[in-house]
Amino acid sequence: MKDLDWGNLTFGYRKTDYNVRCYYRDGKWGEIEVCSDEYINMHMAATCLHYGQEAFEGMKAYRCPDGKVRVFRVKDNAARLQSTCDGIVMPQVPTEMFEEMVKKVVRLNQDYIPTYESGATLYIRPLLIGISPQVGVHPSKDYLFLIFVTPVGPYFKGGFACNKYAIVRDYDRAAPLGTGRYKVGGNYAASLRAHMFAAGKGYGSEFYLDAKEKKYVDECGAANFFGIKNNTYVTPKSTSILPSITNKSLMQIAEDLGLKVERRPVPEEELPTFEEAGACGTAAVISPISELDDLATGKKYSFGDKPGPWSTKLYETLRGIQYGTVEDKHGWTTVVIE
Ligand SMILES: Cc1ncc(COP(=O)(O)O)c(C=O)c1O
Figure 1 (cartoon, rainbow, N blue to C red):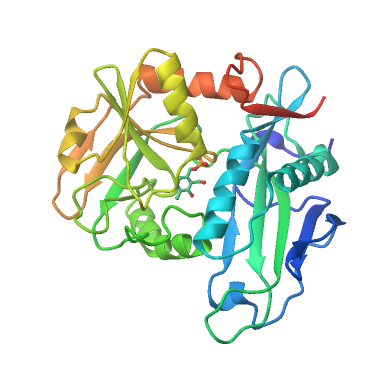
Figure 2 (figure 1 turned 90 degrees about the horizontal axis):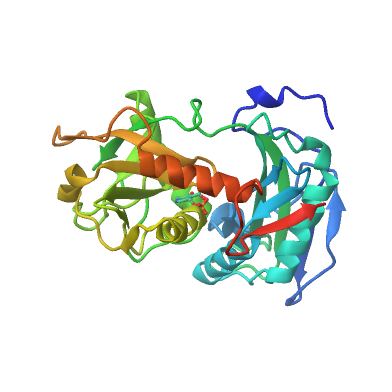
């Protein structure tokens, strides 16, 4: 293992030894290549640069207390990437190829997988880009799919600690029939101004209402929202929300723990009725929300300064499954290194 200060890693890019790549040319995927170059040599007119034909994924590898290394719900990430491919007209990456490349890149960089005790993980970033030169607005013919990894610490400095979010009404991250449900770079470009605005006012992140009516809860920065009340886990349903794999897992765990689960439109007026609220995603796992401030109306919704009991239970169960210390009843984890 590398001699890194595992306990003090931030959520950022750090060079590792290898990435894996595969090209799509003449209508088919080629051989998987191992590469030690961090750079991509591509045409200046590539469609990814001009027309946003770019999709990515995000997942983690966990060094577990039993000595094994596991990845979480890799097939679900493959399926979400396939849905994104359909969304912006790119060829689908087959699930077997996706899984094989994830395993390969984690094994090749195993010296960079943080220790269990540090709480840090190896972040896995699959990326698919259109590389054919094109000046008219058309899909590319050729594509590059690559995966790199990088060791990361917690997304929020405090780890499992509460954050304040700002409800922003002057910015939309995605349109109802746009690309919000796909993991494409354009959505993140569209979120940057709102994010900088909220961060500049001291908030952990921005919080979006639906773009059309500004009545319903949409996304919580780059994470899904959930609220808990009356033994029920409630999460918004919307065409502009990215289907979070963490949220999908939490819905199942909530049900396993005896909570009711509701996925439906969540009006802003419902916010004061939640006993607990949180943001969820691969990066943050669960980030409990202490307060949501609607900057335009001055309304504030408070959920307490400490993580609530259900959020804590959900967090511990999910982390336990990811680290192999809680039974993986649903077959979500894949052992990559025995
Ligand atoms: C916009 C957005 N929503 C939600 C999520 C959470 O998704 P997941 O749990 O699959 O990481 C992410 C992170 O990937 C995201 O970028």
